[in-house]
Every structure is written in structure tokens, then in C-alpha cells.
Image 1: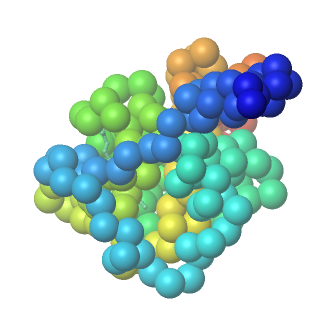
Image 2: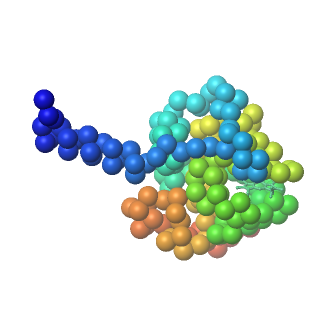
Length: 177
Ligand code: HEC
């Protein structure tokens, strides 16, 4: 029996939807070897955000006001000592503009891979220090610190991009210090 037209259309739609979100591939930012998620901490593996990210490469925490305070304190304790309070750069490179040593960091799959597996020197892997869910949270804060034009915030879905305001330390209560 030939498939009815609606069935055929449904199959086609599903195929198109999957093609729009190919499952991301994760590999070490410098070495190019596949990342081993068996190393990940047990906690924080099965949150909605982690599952969505592993399937689509989309970080649902981006610009989510409910998690940003937690994301900010994670960044303050785990990253700012090397990358600066607002990701402006210190002994590690700036994270708040559109220049990347490793261009894959422009995408969230690349940024996640850099966090999980590390890069070179002092940028060690975070798999033993942050849960997968915390990595997505800290990434959302790195992205929130972005000072570039909204249209270059490629990691945002189009609706979030439309309302994105580049980060301005001067508008913070602490005066950006
Ligand atoms: C002990 C210091 C140190 C800590 C802590 C640290 N980093 Fe780094 N980070 C570095 C250094 C140094 C580099 C440059 C490494 C390289 O170029 O291979 C780097 C590179 C990076 C890069 C690549 C930047 C680019 O231009 O491609 C990203 C992204 C990054 N770090 C994010 C983070 C985040 C997020 C955290 C906190 C979870 C963090 N780092 C914690 C020192 C650190």
C-alpha cells in the first residue's frame, strides 16, 4: 500500500525538522579528539537544558532571567579570576567580544566543548569542576556579557536576538568595577 499523503507529509516534516537541528558533535577545541562525556559529573546530567543541548546545540538558559543570577555567581567563582569580572580579559583572553582564538567558540557547541575539555595551558578542562548543567549556566553568563551587536549574537534564537541588549558595565549598580 502506498503511504497516504498526510503520512508522507508528516514524515517529510519530521525529516526537515531534524535536518534543521543536526545532532551536535563535540570534540576537543585544540586536539580535535571526541569528548568523553563519561567523565562528566553524575549530578546535573539529565536536566531539560542538558538534554536539549545534547540534541540540538541550543542552550535554553541563554537570556533566561531565572538562571542568570546563579550563572553570574558561577562565573565569578570559576572564571573571572582569569578572564576578568566582565569577561574583558586578564591572564585569559576576553570573552565578551566577537574575537575568538578558537572560532568555534562563536557557537555554543564550541564554547561548551572548550569548557568541558579545556584548551591549552591554564585553561584546564572543567569536567571535574562543573556539572554539565552548570557549564550551560556559566555559558549563558558569558553570552550575557557580550558587548557586540545583537545580530552577531549567533547563539541566540531569533526571538531572543531581537530583544538582546549588548552588555554595558556602566549600567550596573557597581559601576562596572
Ligand atoms: C586559571 C585561569 C583560567 C580559568 C580559571 C579559566 N580560564 Fe578560560 N582561558 C584561560 C587561558 C589562559 C586561556 C587561553 C588558552 C588558549 O588560548 O588555548 C583561556 C581560554 C578560554 C576560552 C577560549 C577563548 C577564545 O578566544 O577562543 C574560553 C571560551 C574560556 N577560556 C572560557 C572560560 C570560562 C567560561 C571559564 C570558567 C568556567 C574559564 N575559562 C576559566 C585561563 C583560564
